[in-house]
Length: 256
Ligand SMILES: Nc1nc2c(ncn2[C@@H]2O[C@H](COP(=O)(O)OP(=O)(O)OP(=O)(O)O)[C@@H](O)[C@H]2O)c(=O)[nH]1
Ligand SMILES: [Mg+2]
Image (cartoon, rainbow, N blue to C red):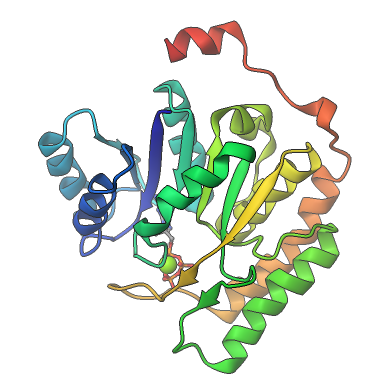
């Protein structure tokens, strides 16, 4: 199974090299696709150097400027699919998503269309240093609010550490259907997958804070996300499994 790990980066100069080396050192063979939005701190140049050092295993998509996580992922997923990836992992480049979980996610994909590495599944955990109110807010947002609003049983709908099967991303028609950016991008992707009848498996993870660099998390971002969840329901609530898109022969040729 050809596995591609899509790593969106914006100012991850301190993390990127360590992350790429950790992923390539895993027992499971994979390639890494860095999607950099012209980071001012030179992350893109570090990615280029790594491409030179690991030809065929590291690739970089340079984008013109910062357009947000959702746009970066849509571009990265399209590229990974064009390059023939059969399994696609999305993860942050700041070590909140730990490479050690990748093999377990790949095993879990044997009987799932998407694997969600979950902070709030039984056995999962967020950083011990989080204040109680931050833990509570995050747990409430994911395990109560989004679950009720979207009528799902997922416990971590905003979690961004996921494995997708190629057929799932194609069947979801993501380039046309997904409009959100930021945290709601993750919610919209999960909701569309569920509505189309894809099987999502959650596995518990520990989620430490980013190792290096500044956190941009704010209450404003969370409130904005909460409102956008309702839009996601309005936009996709009608979807059924018969709305899946089947891979076309043209796509097969791209794959070959
Ligand atoms: N290409 C691209 N990557 C981005 C963009 N925004 C964030 N990222 C990357 O997406 C991943 C997740 O973003 P983070 O900044 O860690 O978001 P977060 O985990 O909610 O917040 P932190 O507390 O700061 O860690 C990281 O690898 C970022 O470098 C963007 O606009 N474009
Ligand atoms: Mg982070």
